[in-house]
Length: 463
Ligand code: GLU
Figure 1 (tube, rainbow, N blue to C red):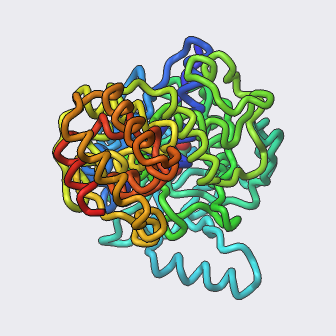
Figure 2: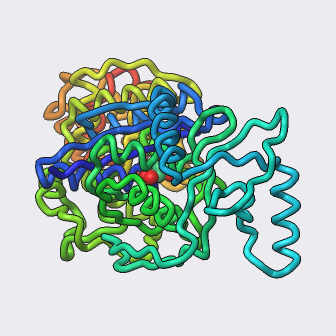
């Protein structure tokens, strides 16, 4: 049975990197008809918040990453971690350490001064014939894992291939803190074991943790999952994607007017490929994603490509759905516009979606229709000239009387052209500038039909 999980820490929004590994874990489980588990790693009590949990759940939902079990909260499993820690202590595979932070720092300093790696000195690690220091009064102990002192830890990483780390590089890590809260590396093992996780996909910042985890799995005598470490995502400056370099949360893209299916497509493709396919559906992703073709080298976040992908999905999106999204965007404008996602807004979406790469861009067009518009001064000067003013007046006269639909508006435009001898662009450009603020719009009759007569006449009147 394939069982995967995603284990975000609720110390902020769902990061794009975590979203991508969530997506791979989800797709892998779905591909194999397995289970996908959501676990909330909230042991960093000081930094974990309910608000972050809510944001993460909302982002998972938005991306359509449905989970079969969870959310499981680590802080609700403290008794289980203690139980396993006690078992390891009883078996001589873990021990209580009473070193104070000051002592530890002094040892580390001394090691650094000798040019050695600042590892724990093993003072409290029991060994046959070894006399341990006497237990100091008033010091709450941590629990440390007896890491094997030497030998290699090797695993065949699903993404990176074989990885080997020598045990001399790592020390007896703390598995339980003085307050009875487990550390990440311990909780993750107990959980992956209890939740029978078969495949772990996560960011490669965890590669250095994996040998400890493997050693703990082995000490417990339980089966290991397979590990796949996905490389970091780089910003367009080649540095690790970070807040300073732009949006890093899924939420920011939702708010920025991206469609979840575009985000899913882009994130999946960022670090994985299926031939030359750039656009694919969820169903295709699930049928193709078998854990192979994951890139070993870092992917670069490409905002322009994401926009392109989103634009493709905008074209395909249903107008009713777009209208609801655009209504939401309009309500968030600095000067909010409260508009029903009715047939009119759907018509606007149908007409403009081909030229918009986000729903924010689409809302900008809608706001020109529902709100007011300030014509671009340079364009106004260029197109709204004395030679066209009589034609604009004539058109206004005809529009004041005609039926208010696209064919009648088209006829009024045609009659105005015939009556003035102007060519279509000579009339259409100034009308567009006056009515929508810019000379670049879809076909004039369709645009005017989306506005009401009074608004069009008022805007033409500004000529
Ligand atoms: N809470 C860890 C993180 O967010 C999970 C790492 C893992 O998947 O093991 O990085």
